[in-house]
Image (cartoon, rainbow, N blue to C red; front, side):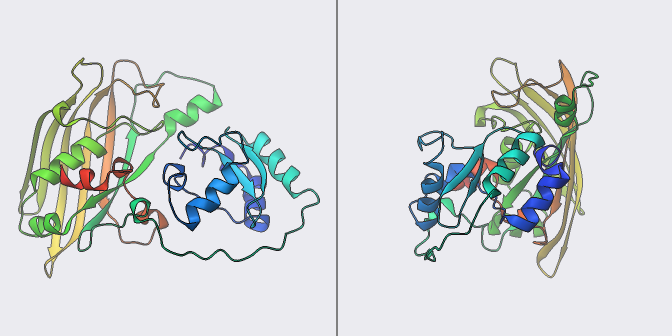
Length: 296
């Protein structure tokens, strides 16, 4: 969301991407580890840049040829820098001859699929107040940002919802991985023992609940109420709409810049229908740990 409101809001960058490049968005935490053709191709490109230690992050914007030659790298937001990099890469560019890369066997560890027979639920979060007034463009982007993630529901949990129950594992997954402040960056997920209290109820299609999350030090927490509706038809869930609203406080290593004190944080959950390409993105909390994310 942050890049969309900064770098990729620049009309010239958008025009160049549409007409002269093939845009690709990946999670480098997966690709730099993948033991397959896709991972090898990514490491070939990234290895030519400054972030070539694949034991750590290789995050950034890369420009490369179809043969894997690096033409440019930048890890900063801002239209001016990225626009200059793109135009420099295009100056005198001629597409090289290249061989087709055979996909081959895919490294399943880093290509997880949603649980068969389960559900994908879109999750969005937003801070609804508490920020100081500012004229700084970048600060405003952070303050207005809206996060996006996916919640995965297993087949067994799907069946339980149809039967009018909210399984404990699903309750804890929602709390630990989706009641987070991920509006400014990658948040710390809640540990199991940081769930101070949790209660969900599903009656006559009305879903309600409350959750209290808090670290041992008390420096970060969230007290939130939940309300929504679940509908079913022919043994399948056809509606899952849930809103969470409460007081959040604190921040993580990569989510600096939160409002001071306690502030209102809201989250919405709605059933995905597969019409958005982002519906296929694994939950952030499942990164490298899908079984743990689902098991609870």
